[in-house]
Amino acid sequence: MSETATLTAELGLHPEERLTREELEVLQLERLQWTVRHAYENVPFYKEKFDRHGVHPDDIRTLADIERLPFTTKDDLRQNYPFGLFAVPMDQVRRIHASSGTTGRLTVVGYTDQDLENWADLIARSLYAAGVRPGWMVHNAYGYGLFTGGLGAHAGIERLGCTVVPMSGGQTEKQVQLIHDFRPDAIMCTPSYLLTIADAFEKAGLDPRASSLKVAICGAEPWTESMRRELEDRLDIKAVDIYGLSEMMGPGVGNECVETQDGPHIWEDHFLPEIIDEDLRQVADGEQGELVFTTLTKEAFPMIRYRTRDLTSLHPGSARPAHRRIAKITGRNDDMIILRGVNLFPTQIEEIACEIEHLTSHFILELTKRGTMDHLTMKIEPDPAATASEAEAALKFMQKRVKDRAGTTIGAELVAVGSLPRSEGKLKRLYDLR
Ligand code: DLL
Image (tube, rainbow, N blue to C red; front, side, top):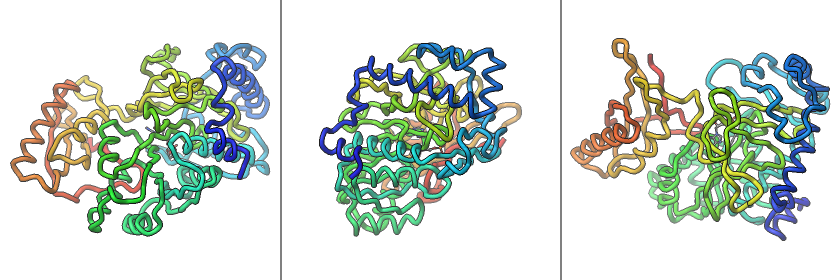
């Protein structure tokens, strides 16, 4: 067992989770200063950008000085494709991952041996926070390959001292069979894929509530409290939120604690979070805005003030007091639909759809143009047990609730049960047909 696994097993918390806020901030400043200098000295992109901004690593004397540094964006990553932002020679890069995103070129990230060590430790901490214990079996249904989910989770499952079932995404019937036969204690997959798996259990004539699973560690896409309730109810499990992004590392940038289930604690000894408003100014904890991160320990791929485009807010730590939490991510600012002047996120509609009897959470949103106006139509599968009139009434009720809560009118249609594409990883909800 590694040092982390032993500590976690014996003491419950990793030493850096037991720091006071003051102690953590001392560590953060030390690591921030190291990161800024490392990026400046080894990545020409950062040197040029800092010089242009008239800021030098010596200017970072307090954590507040981070505001003097320029932001980094997804576009910067694309323009430095593939390895232009790496801060170590290629022979020290032990692994590459990449994410395709929705548009444009791949964004490529790299890891040294030490980065991979830290990542495995952080996943182990995340799993422990989620209630997973050494000796458990963990079914890993995050996709293996260039996506950070599969391999990232894999190393951390082993690091905690668990048995990993490296299933990857897809082959849903086989997932059900292995869960049934191997009797894993926990599962890792996207929330939408867990729903697909729950459906497949029923299709196979098995009761998902009777499975061996106790905990699901779900992330990689936005999901709502209603979706959590649905998953917990249908599978008789605890569903815990794991957050991350390739540009920082992958999964395990933060994780929710099973005892509080109140949003992922950011592992602030490795990542420094900020929330900014539309004018790119920091806002106070508790206020909603765009999440920005600076890595504090990354060797191969340091990121300074990376704009994630994820919208959320920061809150004081709960079960891990020194580490702040993020609220459930509403969505990315690129998922936002602007409908006749009203901002709307697919998660707001998910929240409503999951609450209403006779409807399911299998739905898609289609954005079309009618004349000069944008129009949003929801296509949703009814509950197979509902009668046609129950489903119709539920659909009308849903539209009214969207109007009341979100302040905008959407079209809605029922579609045949099983006709919509099922998620095998990150779910695509919105189809822009304009
Ligand atoms: O999705 C890493 C990951 C894998 C996280 C497995 C959790 C579990 P990317 O493909 O780079 O990396 O996508 C990152 O996914 O900026 C968010 O928009 C979204 N996302 C990730 N986790 C959550 C979450 C992985 N828990 C992007 N809630 C991020 C909401 C999430 N959105």
